[in-house]
Length: 91
Image (tube, rainbow, N blue to C red; front, side, top):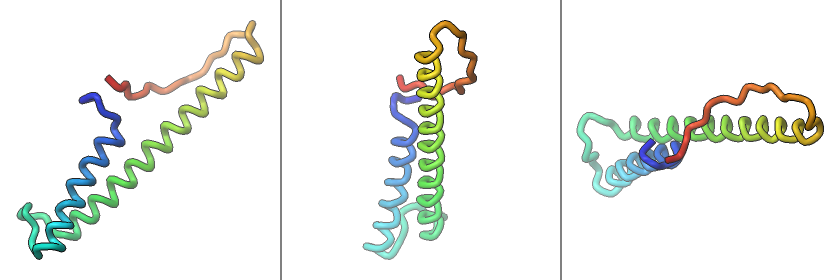
């Protein structure tokens, strides 16, 4: 969606939060009213956890696909049935 990888989208949102923290450190106030400094830091932690989980899931799926392809090479005459989860397409 939007032509960018979800992890890069999460990193952009994380950068927004980092800039809010930087503004607070440099000027002593947040430009976004109603959001505390601890909220901005916690949001960054959450974005990192989401990125980690997303990348881990992609790597696990890639290993599964590689395993299926190796199976097809070893047993070219047998049909291979496997569940490959839907992936997020980059457009």
